Image (cartoon, rainbow, N blue to C red; front, side, top):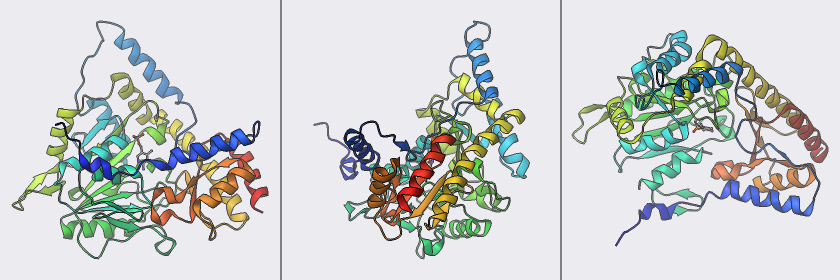
Length: 408
Ligand SMILES: *Cc1c(COP(=O)(O)O)cnc(C)c1O
C-alpha cells in the first residue's frame, strides 16, 4: 500500500487568497462594470529595468551560439553572480560575507520552505503571528506540529506581533530551536531595530538556536538606522541564515532569482552535542536536489547588482514607497491607526474593532478596493487588514479617493 504523508492532512487549505478571489468574483457579478482596484496581493506590477533586460537579452544571445553556449551551471550559482551580490549587498556595509556563503536559487519561498529539512524533526519551531504561511506549512508537512486547533497548530511556538510590542516580538521565555523572523515584515510592514535584532541574536547564541532571517523586502528600507542584514549584529554569523530575493527588489517575481546566505561559521549540532557546519549541509542539499538557476536569469540578476542596476532598482522601490506613503497618509487622515508603509510596501491597518473580513467587505462593496484580511495571516492578524503598495500610481490614487469617501 502506498501510504501518504499523514502530516499533509493536518494542513489547512490555503483559504485566504481563494476566499478573496471568490468574494471579488461574486462582487463583480453583482456589480458588472464597476471598477475593482486590487491592493491585495503581494506581487509587483512594474517592468524589469533596462540594464536587467539588456543583460537578459545578451545572455540569451550567448546561449544561441555553440561557442558561448552554457549547459548545467554550478548548483550554488555562478561565481559572477555570487561575487556581484557580495559586492553590492554585503561588502559596502563592512560585512564579512564571502561569495562561498551565498547560494543562488529560484526563490526565497523555496529556500525558506526547504531549509527546515536540514534539522531534526523533533526540534521546537517558533514562527511569528501574523506570518508568511510558508514557514508554518513546511514545518507541518515535515511533522513538526500537532493538529490544527482553533486557528493554530499544536506544538509550534507562536511569536505574537501586536500593537503592544509594536509588532516586533521579543524572544520567548522558554527555549526554542529554530526561529523565523521577517523584516521588513510581510504582512505588518514593520522593521526591526538593531537593539531588537541584537536581543534575538543573543537569545539564539545562548540557547544554541538558529535564526532564519527573511529579508525579502530589504530594498525598501530608507531609515538609515535600521539594519539591512542580520549580520550587522555581531555574532549573528554563527546563529543566523539570511534569505534575500530579487522578486520584490528588482521585479523578478516572474523571472525567479533569490539567494540564501549561510556563513561559514553558522553552526547546528549533532545528537551528541558536537557542532556541525550548516553551510555544508545546505551545500549538500542544494547540490543533490537543485540544479541551479538558468544562466540568462543569473546574468539579469547580476545586472541588477551593478552600479547602474542598483540605481534603477532604487527608483522602482521609490515608486512603490511613494504609493505606500499616499495610502498611509490617507488612512491616517480618516482616523485609522496604521503600521508599516515607510520602509516596506505594506500598510497594516487596525480595523478599529471591526473584524478583518468586515473591513475587507466594506472596502470591497463601498470603495471597490481589494485588500487582504489580516486574519488570513494568523490569529493575531484578526482585526487588521493589509494594504499593498504594489500597483500603478493612478490606481493607488483612485483607490485612496474611493476609500476616503467610503470610510469618512
Ligand atoms: C515575496 C516574499 C518572498 C519572496 O519569494 P520569492 O520566492 O523569492 O519570490 C519571501 N518572503 C516573503 C515574506 C515574501 O513576502
